[in-house]
Image 1 (cartoon, rainbow over the protein chains, first blue to last red):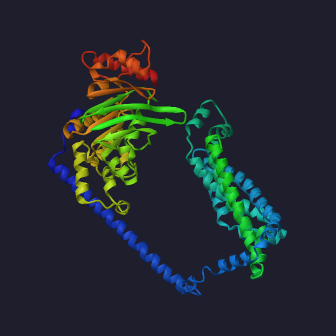
Image 2 (cartoon, helix red, strand yellow):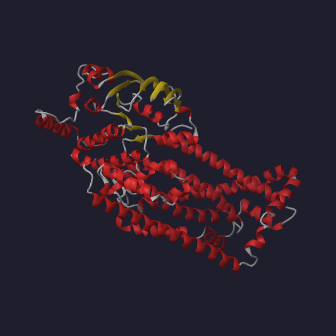
Image 3 (cartoon, chains in turn orange, cyan):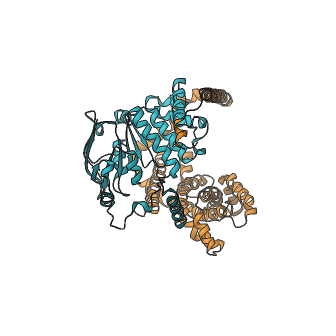
Length: 291
Length: 276
């Protein structure tokens, strides 16, 4: 065995290895060069097409990009004294929005866990039905929340419940996909160990899979909570209540209510920051066992 | 050449390496032995600047490498190659690309991203692979190779760096005895033919005795033995490992030697069966 390290290949052989590799390297370089070129051409031509179809034009409008934020900030700055009051006024609506998001996240994640467990290869209870559950989550993800909310508002009338259902459905679809990716990375050895002692499917999942995936579920769930706060704010625009409704009123009013809009942006931003901080310390706790 | 002075590393309340001092004045093959947690890996990682030292100096040709920052530290790392127990190659890249990584310190990030290496570098990488007997694997992905071959690719990457010193952290701990011998023979060859210093953490005493010019024994972060392989008797080994009379290195040795070879082999086999 020791000789194999010292005996070099024949001169001719090593030359072929060298040439083969250099050829391969050149070919790869050519491919990546062509790909970069195609990408650049597509981007530039696509931009020009899109810009040509625009009513205004990207370059003509670009300098006006800062106009709206500047208007808003200058008015809010001028009426800075009103801000604390507006923030207080916005709080009940904010709580409604966060509540919609929280309930939708909890219900949606619960649905997502079920869909993901039934749609993961190696874990599913009915392996043949995996594609069915996957397509269901696809459908749930494909329909925009706004569409579901509009339909439900048409049927049930405006309010937080249609918004909550719309967001929960979308969350179930999105989480079903993300959770099943988490499930795919689980170590199946503990599951096998539990199978070897005669555990049922439920016991195997509960004791073998859930402890492994729970921290990841939680961190995806908290990320989704942030996304859902924003989603439930947007649904306010179509009449689902909450802070989005207030924001729409302030923005459509235009000049004169920009200070109120600024206050709403501010509380939304602070809420997202708070949720982010909270979720990162929670995640730390879950993965490391201490804050 | 290399002088380590009072090197210390503290992790929280645990002193991993405790005022370690030694010097090596020629390109020797130095083995470091000791039980798990004795501070061997931390010592090597500090030399390569993968881990920062809490205190102390490492002088190489008179200058303290622990004082280097940023680009200087990276330049030092390129002069002081590291070989890992788990090979630490990029599994999805081909063997030659992995070897070329030894030149990263001299290459610009942009050129690296587009995989632009000069013909001369590619040729040299293949020559090094040829020298280690694995040139025919050149275009395979690193993950497709066996452990012994991957470790030789890692050694080739180290040689591509053209280093002064090669640090090897348990280079054979995850290899079977045959591949372990190939890897150790390769390291020894690099040591004697190229005159590069090799410092290796080893976990088998017979390997240390067979390949090293000098053996350093560590226990609880301190050096407790520093001498020639001949001085490394069973009694000394018991001290290093903190073991009592029941400690018998042959119980777990994989040495295949002399007239006992057959019996030994059988014993090892039985032991493996007992373990698995």
